[in-house]
Length: 323
Image 1 (cartoon, helix red, strand yellow):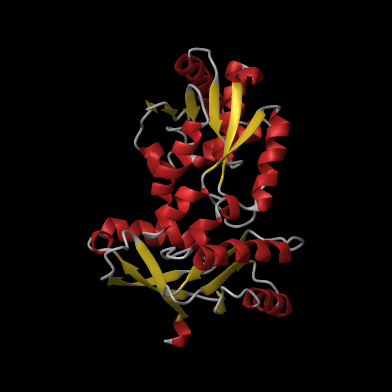
Image 2: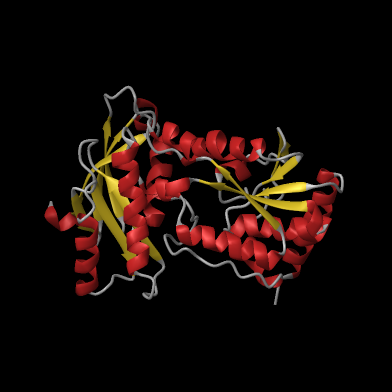
């Protein structure tokens, strides 16, 4: 049974969507995740299906094939028009300076959506992300109808509306982009980018019939070496792990494979701005990395002397019992 407060939240959001859009057309930045699916459903209820368009930013090799299948399936179930627009070339430029999902959203995803849209663009920003926490309703044509929503409320609303959102299976939380698993500068897309793109597809292929809550390959190490850290929960049997490791080692761009089987220590080189900020380091460890590792992590921070690194990169890892 849906809590009455969520029903009120739905109704107030429907009213706001009508008001903000002036009962006109709206484009939803659609990833196929929980947040954007709820925005799509609410926009459709508020304005009618013929006034809502879904727009997915396709990141080429960094988009999961299963994720694209989910986007297509949900658009059909919602009965809404779906279009795709490219965005991966800007992603590669951003990652040259180090991992940054926030920059990617601002400088790759949103500009790609704006260039393919007329009028207001609605996103799934909510209290679980930094954009939602700003409380900005509408800025430069970008509208955040879920900005005051908490993640449990989003899940409850989808249940109330009888909308099931399939999972890719890469992580318990936000899904859809393989590039977030490249935890270092992408100095060479054909080496660093290819490694993270192909390894994560291979892992999910192996686990297609294996029930899991997490399955990703993090690419770490110095720029001259790609180390693949495999995170899967629950941990598969040894024979399956051996097959997956063999398949990953067959990738020319991967130099070493380490399966995460216990508490892990990461050595992270950070830009001076991040190294000197306790808040930034706390967020990277607890908000960015820990949720997508199979076991607890601990971090050894060092200050980077590479002026091209604007964020951080994981340059090594080891299990605690190896100390």
